[in-house]
Image (cartoon, rainbow, N blue to C red; front, side, top):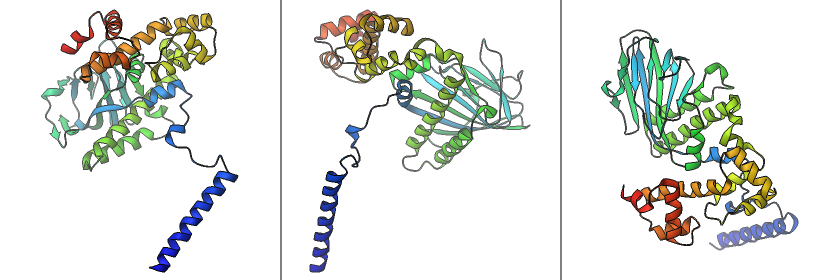
Length: 344
């Protein structure tokens, strides 16, 4: 026992000595604690970081030609079709049918009703009329079709729970299609394979793993669209990528309750007041303070619907001196009072 105590004593002395040497000779060598970590400097990257999904539904479908599925509109959801093998046609009203080959992904960021078919003219059966095998609450298996050529498809339906990420999705088109030949590597196949493994086993924490893997699929699809689309240079996306306005938007998103003004935002990004105001309005499409108010009220609306916080608490949380001032701002944005929104 004495030998053990002596060993512990010398070990503690050694650790203390190493700490003193590190502090004295290598003052910058200690790892940073979480509160010291620098914030992201890429505004678009920060928005992508906020793309966190909830309510993932995952379906593995084995479909034999001829087959067709009519998927209903799901407001507030992202719908994803991934062709693992075979091929199919994707059809959305008002759009030309698109062929999806093995390894391709189609993402409907607005939850738009759509049909997938073995052939462009095949009848599509309503999804609700097709039997499924429910493996878990989040994982389904579907067998459907006439017995011909086999196509395997992975289907995901997910929600995005952060307002900034929802605003990013609003600027995306009806369909984001990533074809297998356009992928730099096999990230899609590898990610879907991991989702399938987790979904089948559903070990402890499996639902969280599936949700985070779905995060990756959605983020990768968005990144691909941003890298290849001309629309990224327009509107809110262009504002996010602007050297000055992107930083202003990030500051507003991070600290909605801060006492923002045109002057303080201009100082935050290093522009004159007039230069900042004109640049913000030109890129975002509305004045800076209008954006601040609408951002606060959108966040407040979520809180009203999802919590029981008193209006006075919400007013303080979003930077208003009184409940009355908060209510007036809310009514200007939504045309109705916060109390009425909560009652609905």
